[in-house]
Length: 289
Image (cartoon, rainbow, N blue to C red; front, side):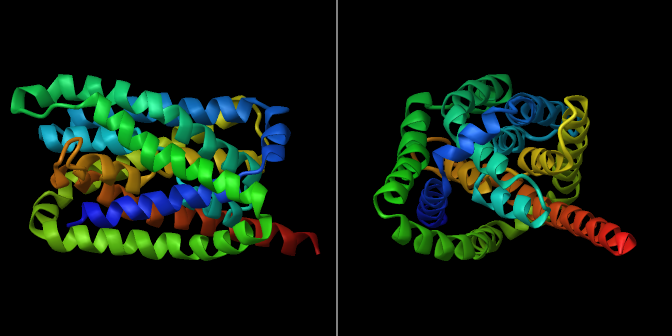
C-alpha cells in the first residue's frame, strides 16, 4: 500500500525541484566552486562511508544495514532548499547542489547499493536488480525535474504559482508518508527504536560535524557553510523509501524504516540548528544597535 503513496510524492517533490531551477543560479555558484566540491564530497562519498561504518559498529541486521546505507545515498530533496532559506544560507547554492546531486546519484546509488548488497545482503537472499533501479530513478527522479524546468521556461508565471503550492505541501506529504509507514510497521519500529534511533542520530550528527569542518577548510562564507551543513545533513527520505519498498527493486518495506527514522531525527536536529543560527543572528543585530 505505502509504495503507491511514496511514488507520487517523490514525483511531485522532484517536479517542484525542477520548477525552482534557474540556469543563472548555476552560473553564480560555479564562479565559487569549492563549496560545491565539499558538499558533493560530503553527500556522495563521506556520508555513505560513515553509514557503512555505523552499520558495522551497531551490528545492524542485513535489512537495516542496507536501509541505513540507502538513506545515506539519497541526498538533497526540495526540503533542503527551504531549510537553507530559513537558516539564512545561500539558496542558489542549495538549489544547485540539490539538482546536481539528484543527477549524479542516478549513477552513484546503483554502485554503492550494489556494494552494500554484496557485503551483507546476498547471504540472506537480498539482491539488487540494478537495471530496475536505474529505470525507476530515471522515471521518478530525472523526468519530473526536466518537466519542471521545461514548465519554468515555457510558462514562468504558472510555474511560480505551482511551486508555491507544492512547496507548502512537501512537509505535510512526508508526514503522511511517515505516518502510513509507522501504522504498518509500528511494532518493528518500536522493537528496534533504541539501536536504530542511536544509529541514525549518530549519522546525522557526524554528517553535520564533518560538513562543518570541510566547509571551514575551504574558507566558505557563513551563508555557504550553513547551506553545506544542511545539504549534507538532509537526505531524500522519499527516494530511499521508494527504492526500498518498490516491487521492482528491493520490495522490502522494513528496509525503509532507517529512512523513516532518519527523516524524523533529521528534521528535529536541523530545526534546532536553524533556531540556533537565527537566534545568533538576532543577537548580533541587537548588539549592533
